[in-house]
Image (cartoon, rainbow over all chains, first blue to last red; front, side):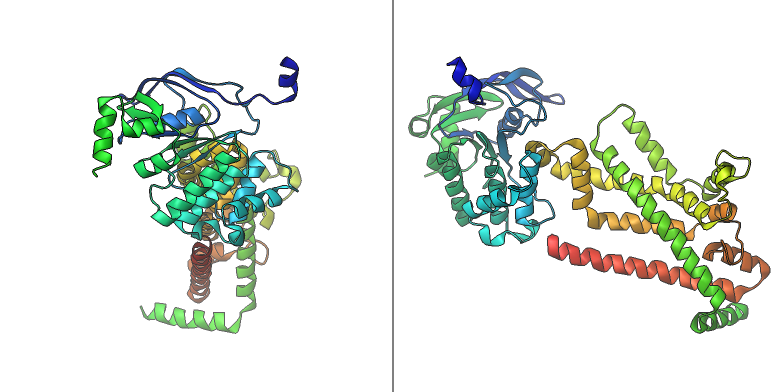
Length: 246
Length: 234
């Protein structure tokens, strides 16, 4: 067992979030959230506005430091080493260069040798259906195309874990469907998916398990089919009723 | 008022005829100010970008000082450079006082803080938009500063123009370290000051018109470039 670990790089996962508290000024956003994330199932985080979903995602990804509590990866990335986790934001931020150059930039940040960057970049663009747009300036692509580009940029790095923060919040149904297809494909290729969404249809389509956050607390964690059929907590039941009027 | 009208007419004649003295003065002005802007850009823009993305002790006071230096009086810069370059000064051995080189040095010192302060502002605003994405990708601080400089290059054009405007229009520094020597270090602003005090209004006005025209043309060109870039890159 130890001999194998010497050769194989240790997995990032499982991730242990241990009693994480986050204060923004005087306001407490997260009140001691704890859970483990294992490799495998697609994890969807849902909850009403202001529940602290986006903050939680950023703390897991290391963009915010918790006020107290810990985020412990099984084998964390050493400082300055290429990151094995990516994140896709609600509004993609593209550099003022071509679509391909944006993916190449991410590969460069990740320490990929210069000569293989264009190939990996083009392959990633092709996987999200943007192969024909490699030379287009990224910022003039449509919202849906930019979000696919953001996914290509993340996928090119082959992350073990991908965090998504409402990636389809401002997209139409067609573009949303495309994004979901790519997320499923990335998951099939071996990436752990952790996604925040407001779209309950999307949560049903993509979720294997659901974390329900309410007012900064993890109120319920369940398999997706169970959660949507018969939530255990009153908060989740009320939330689902409000979100799904039919 | 009649004097003014006559002076304008004569000035137009001077410009139209391509008066040799006038052309020399204009060309030297362009060389000095453009060289200063190039050096000040190479130093000031990256320095400003680094201050924008870096976190270190004394950053706030440094920004205050940087912003204050935008109002640096050009005569003070001229005086300090004069003292450094004069024969008895620490750099007196170079023997470059009263040469265009000295003027470039003085103007570079004059406008570098302005360019650094403005670049700091623009890059910091940009950084707010890019921060999470670039940190998520694991970009390093120094690389981030260069990335932002390049990504905001069309906004930075405005800074370069502001720097050029300040260099081309200042008179104190080039007067002191250049000496306004005819045919050697006489530039548009020092010539205007001299000719006005001598009473040769047509030459002074002609130079003034050209100075304005150059700054206007540069701004127009930059505006075209910026608009084209915005359409192309979003």
